[in-house]
Length: 412
Image (spheres, rainbow, N blue to C red):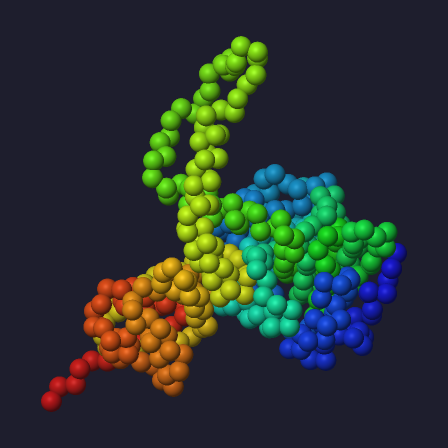
C-alpha cells in the first residue's frame, strides 16, 4: 500500500498556497495520481446547508437518488430512517440513528445524488469553484455529477469498488474520511486520509473504497474522462430527435410467434429494428444533431459542466419600463446555419431576434440596469417585439438577469 499520496492533513507542501489557487493543483496533481489536497478552495457548504439539501432531496428526489446503506447493504425502503422534520441538523439525525433499534448500533451511510439542483445559491457556489478549476485544466465537455454523503462508522459496500470512468473531486465537509484507491493498470493501492477542509482527488480508471470512522459529510464531484462517456449524452440527443421526426407510427409492439423464417431456417432482424436503424441513419444525415449537440454544449458550458441545473424560475410579464441588469455569464455560441445559441446557468435557447447581439453587448457593458425599451432601441426593434420579449424572458427565467419593477410614471 502506498501512503505517499496521503500526507498529514494540513501539511502538504505541494498543495495550493491559498484557498483560491488551483494552479499548483492543476500542474502537480490533476489526472496524475490519487492525492489529498488541504486548503483547496472551499465550497462554502456548512452543516445547515447540508441538512437543507438532504431534507429537500428527501422531500422531492426520486428513490434512486436517495439511498441509505447499513453494514448489510442498501435498504430497499428506508422510510422513517431518512431525515425528517424532527432532525434539527446532521448531528441530530446521527443521534437518532444511533438509538434506532433496527440498525443495532451498526454504521450507516446516506447518499443523495444530484443534491444541488434543489438550491440555486448552493449550486452556483459549487459551479463557480469548478469554473475556477477549468481555467487551469480546460473545460469539462461532459456533465459533472454531484453526490452528497453523510455517514457514521461506515465502510463502502462492494459495488463502490467497481472501476469508474470518471475522475473524482471529494470535499470533506465535516469529520474524517479514509479512501483506499487502486488505479487501473497498477498493483499500487493508495490510502488517503482526509479531514474537514481537505479535498481528495483521484484520476479516472481506478476503484475506491470509503471508510468513515465517525460522523462524516462529503460532497463528491465526478468528472467523466473517457471518450465512451459521451455516448449516453449523444444517445439521448439522437433519441429525442428521432422521436420528433414525422412519420413514426406506434405500430404493433409484439412480434408473431413463432418468428417467421426463410425455408432454410434463417431469421432476419425484426422490421421495427431495421426501421429504427434507417431512421437513425436519416437523422444523422441531417443538420439537426450538430445543432442539438451545440445547444447541449452551450448549456453545459454555462453551468461549468455541473448538472443537473436548478429548474428555471417562473417568468414575469416584461414591460418597456422594466429595468434589467446582468447577474450571470451569458454564453453565446454562433452556428453557421442558423441563429446563435445562448445559455446561462445550465439552460440554453435560440436567440432569434436580428439585434440579439446588440442586446447582449449592451447587457454585458452597461454600468447600470437598462430598460427593455433601451434594449429594444439597441436592437433596432420595438419594445413589444415578441422575439425580443421571449429572449429577455429566457434570460430572466435562467437567472441571467434581474428585473426591477417598472417605475411609475410621474404626474405633472
